[in-house]
Length: 278
Length: 300
Image (tube, rainbow over all chains, first blue to last red; front, top):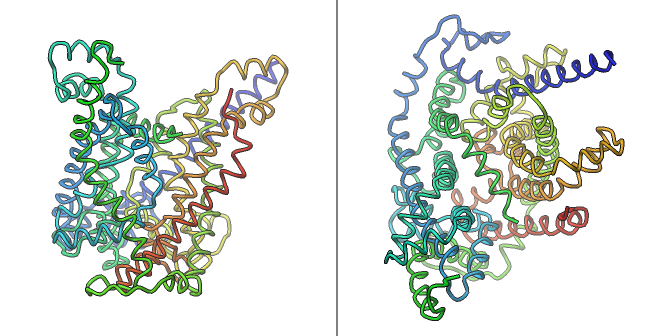
């Protein structure tokens, strides 16, 4: 009996060890990035690698920000990500309200068509979207980064599923009191949907902030670059300047990792919801 | 549903309201999804450099040029190798971690945060970091391998090693997503199934094979389909980690498409590649549905 118990304790301990070792390996590249970004050059180019800097310096950050306008890149990324996020909350909640609450001809067919567009690879629509923006004269502007993202099938789906769980009785009372549909959405449904809205917001913000290919295609001038585009071009130019590259990478990942730390449950919820489509 | 009002009046009013509520979304979708889907199909039968006014109809030439091009087959092969390298490893790792995190583990939240963190960071930054990890002289990976007596590898300059490096990074970057999905699936399996099996004397492995895996199969199937679709569309990490090199050994389909569209401005050809990619992904999805749907248990 005690041998079995000892075996179990051993097993549990081993399991913990393996899991924590795995987690450590997973975050090791992050740690290495952060530590390298604060190292002096001799510390970086040393073998065997030294984890802990012999002296903490900020010169890599200073040099990176002097070599490229990362402040401007930041501003662009945050502006674009915020605009798209707010825009999607408006458009998706309106569309979701129509699909969840209004009765109109062809509603369900339209909804499934909508879901179907999620299966289309982005590359199929990329070239004509670029041309539309070219015709509009929007290439290399904020509009090119923002407008195509102002609607989302995933966001509409996510909010519709949530709206369906809200009891209709709450709205009936408001409508008898003479509230219009916009008022019902704005005053009753949206306040009750904060978790779903938060999930959509963190997801959209992360997606837009981290997006690369679209920015690469529609942006040509330096002052319009987003953080990810700026970082990719920076890495082309400073191939082996590891200190600066790591400093720039720390800068490019910090906002999302911070949001992630405080809003983790919404990220997890978003992933889980995306897995419930069928 | 609208018990308080006559149905016909509501339906008519709702129709108007629906147009109003849906119009922003429909406008954006019309311009940036629906129109592009048809227009790129139309373009794939034309020769056009985007700046000229003339679109010359060339029939199936773009598609024929693609299937006759050795480079197209090379990038398709590379994409398939990448998919075969990442998806099974990714899913296995995700399932194992999710399975054990579903048990009584101290510090579950910290562990989950750690495993999930690579998912939220940008692919560009991730690839920059991994270039440093793979650095041949001072990089972390060669150093760790040296503990086991493995000689230094020039990861990103050797054609075989570069694809391997891309795969390892791809798994690291995305397995957290699947871990979360598997976790949700595992939590959805009712406890009493396990209790009943335990009473019947089923061991740990038997319970895993006969209860966990079958009941998890809808999740597994969904993850498989989504992972294959995702890995066929890999681009960002390739662009930053290897730029498709060395010698084209990591050039994948989307990278090839990007080059033809926005470097050579061969819009017709690039559109044909986009549709071929769509067709390949669609075929794979159908095949997976055909071969795995039979073994997916939806009912409890």
